[in-house]
Length: 83
Image 1: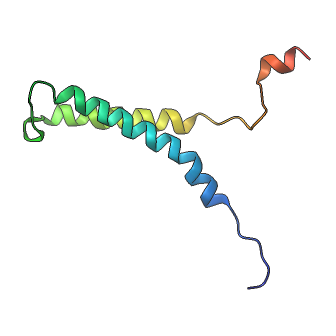
Image 2: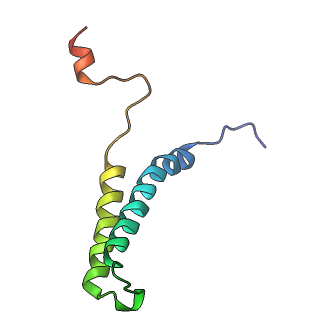
Image 3: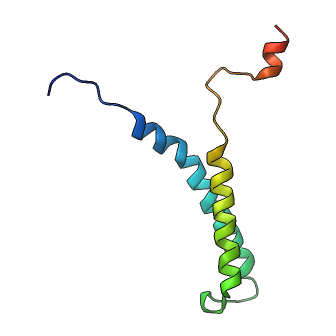
């Protein structure tokens, strides 16, 4: 090993994406639960319902992943205006 420091970029990307993946899973399971009421089974889910479930997952993942996390200690614009 030459003493080079390894870049933590992939690990940071994974940490940022974890919250979005979790949101997508929760949205998908919620949409699936709404479809499977009344004793329905996976075989009775129509293609339109699958599209709705996938759309819920994509919107939840994209919405959470697209919003940048604030650095620790950052209070936003209102805190800066009061100083």
